[in-house]
Length: 289
Image 1 (cartoon, rainbow, N blue to C red):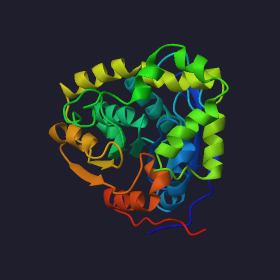
Image 2: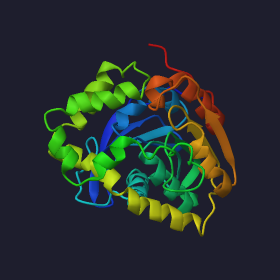
Image 3: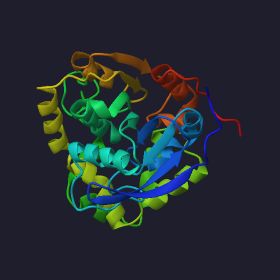
Image 4: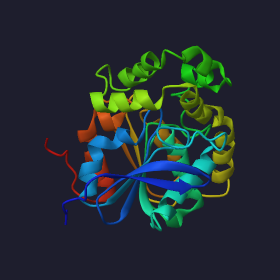
């Protein structure tokens, strides 16, 4: 039965050698939300309220992003999974439903694969998993152009200083089919990705991608994903993630949201909540203003 959620609060927690800020709201079984680039926990603003009627929502900033420590290393997804597990530990939660988008997806995947007792249900959206078969159509023209740009040490930071707003706005506009994101979220994202150290933290996720790809390959060679899993695609990833998951997942549900950009929670939160209601087995709808 839905209940009136407790108000949103920000908690500062230590996890796996870093500190991060975790937005919390609601009560009940935990649900962990993992964002991507160029986001902070605030990419989930539109869905936190509806989820908080049924769950204790935990939305941390990822390592090096937002209000998290700009760590020197540890940006591979196996270590990010340890960061996520440490957030649950710090907040007294033995397990959670886990929802992830973009850069948060490989970490959520490895957390569920290596520690299935910690992930009750898994929802992954708008990302691909290393070099696993199934995403050939998405990668047919090579990886997205910014993957290589971000991967070169020191280059992107040097080029972008003083132009962070224009650069981040390009992703926010492209990821919402030209609409852009609401002013509060835009301001939060621009602040979070301003300055050399903030950019370094962001691009460190890309520089760790080869390591992450090896980790994923090694993990699926010995494990299957047994956690009930939902794959949600939009533009541009579409069904590529689901295609990667099908051969290695015991229980997979697939959704592709039409007329939706990459930043699903801010572009089509209504459609996302429909898919999440199906995955989580609870009624979810956008909060009225």
